[in-house]
Length: 141
Image (cartoon, rainbow, N blue to C red; front, side, top):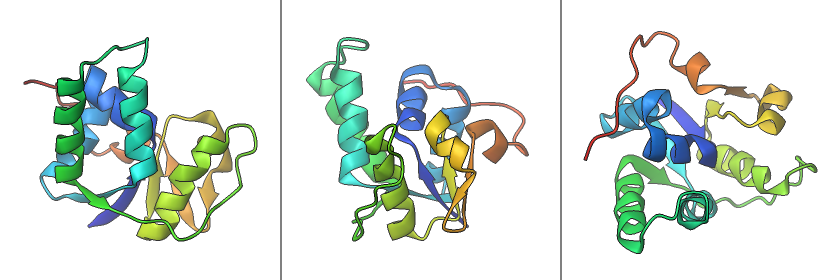
């Protein structure tokens, strides 16, 4: 099973728009990938969804947090990294991946993708990760 760390934007896109990012979450939910999550990544996801762009209600945020916790492995980073100087919050993704011993980081972030890899952890887009899968899943409640 692949150990994967996803960027907060992947989680946000999955929850808000569905498509390929949601396919990744469904793979985690079904046990095909081991998706790592830290408190920092979850907090960023919820902060963005609560913010002025999306304005999610507290109830919807709680439901989403519960869902994400149920399909991910909670990771506690032990190393503080300072790699992405242009956007230091991206370092939380790298910290999660290192702590989780992830094989892959899935991201749409140009700073992370620009690295190509970090400490042997490949950094790819959702599409690259899902290449063998032909159809994205739609979010439904």
